[in-house]
Length: 313
Image 1 (cartoon, rainbow, N blue to C red):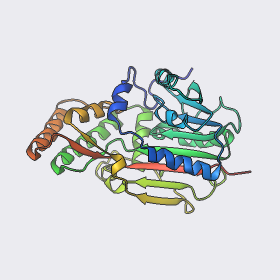
Image 2: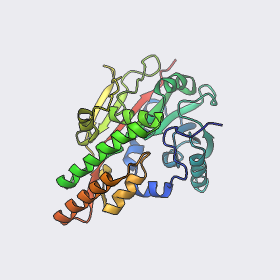
Image 3: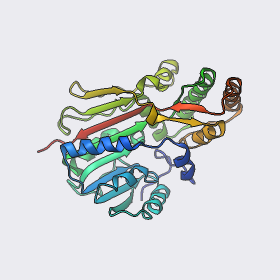
Image 4: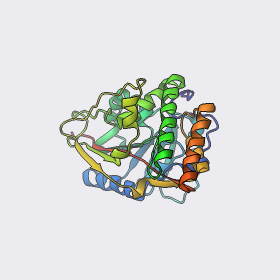
């Protein structure tokens, strides 16, 4: 049994209904892009493994194409949430559920996966160990997928509210580093690197790894790295042969929030600071909304995607 305490995104009694309601949704266009990439380089749809799956949100989309979807997470409670959600679906896909950290693939057979995916969770993983395990389990020509949207989105329609929101974000970062678990701290640093810290060795993956950055210029973390001395920015592992795509997709990654909605969104984060300073910042956001006559604020996420192909023998 894996001890889920302190590993990654592991919160006892976590409210997944709030998570699915107030977090951004992965758009259909994202899944279509992944599927087109996989079809181009492999086009075998037998087994996919979604690691760090949480409630199985991405696994549900994978089940529309693969015969079998393996759903794993470090947290036993989350695995059970995913099981209850996914086993109610009307799908031909078979689900297999397993509790483990993403980097532990020892329980899987060699050349057993056509796709390995990890959605908004790779920042918690031990990347060196994960890349040691993947070559054995991912079939030649199989697809590696990593998707991550930033934890602290940008407010784009109210400058005063955005300023208070970023002050709150700085507080979230500094306290999270001071008070969070080792995995949580690794999660902060991985998020700031925007997945550039993920090394995809050329002896394991085909050249021309695809690294897509969506709405990068709006990413608040880029400014936090310069402002906050607590941050130790990870070294970039991008190679000269990697294909870098910088794009903008506002429509797919914006959402309007009331103040109450925004507070509910914050409650879904792995670490949530409290205290009088936080209350003051919420009051500043509310005051900025009132002065502008706004009932909602528009939030925009930055998204980073990696698509890579396991080298053929």
